[in-house]
Length: 380
Ligand SMILES: [Zn+2]
Ligand SMILES: [Zn+2]
Image (tube, rainbow, N blue to C red):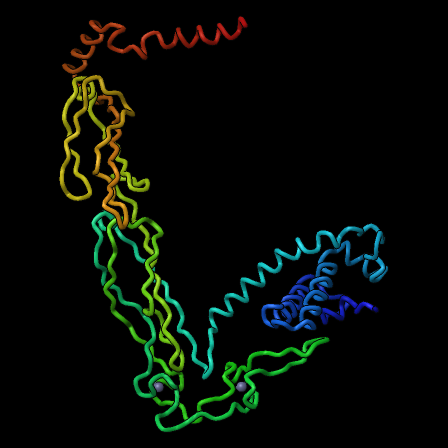
């Protein structure tokens, strides 16, 4: 069997650059993809051929070898490029992902059924809420620019009483053929978008669209405990479908505004509070306001150090769709007094004089311990 020329397979000239190759390849691969031609062996063979041609021509080394030796360059043990068939399938995979993505996108956008009904688009609405709102939950009023079915033509796009006529561009086939290099390519008809018929007398209110723009007001229930990035789907609240097709969905993407005092980690909340040196030394009680607006008392024992964390059970965030609640962690930092008056300085100096190593076990002798540690290392 004589193999077809790789350039001819892709319908490009021998001087085609990388971009031209890729574009040609993608068009053809989409056209002959087995997914689009189920049970069609010829299309499948063509699809493989296209992939093989592109695999060689996209690689400058393989392409140079092909230009010099033709298909022989890749026969068994042929010039330097041997074994490339082995990785053929794996290296094709990444390109196909790409194309699959596109095809999926196309399919989603054009979910057509008979009669040209088309599902409306999904809509995305970004909403920012405060941590307090995420804590308590709320009902938010939003206004969404969307489309609704035209009331005059009931979504058909045709003036009431008028019918449809066969599309003059494709004569009702819904597809048109166009020459593309080596191949004749079939495409969806641009006039009727594949429906095969067009509206004979368009509705005057919607100009044949079948739907009208509308600003819709919706009340959205935001449950307590939502997290940053939570997505709420409101089925059927997206754009109206075309010609009686189902409406799309509305997705609300929630983001939570950073809070001035609380950081969140899952259901737990973290809060840093500064306490005075004397409170840390003598101990005391603090009142912390929590997200529910209540206050909670935190007892700090005497001799509390910076970084010490206190846990207040059940004062964190509610867990979505559950009766559980996280905890609140309060971390203290001890503030060293500044701007001392003469009297304060005297008192502290006096305090220092009567202090012993028991009062500050960590700092007493720290530098000599550190020195000894490193000297000890030197001896070993
Ligand atoms: Zn209308
Ligand atoms: Zn048509």
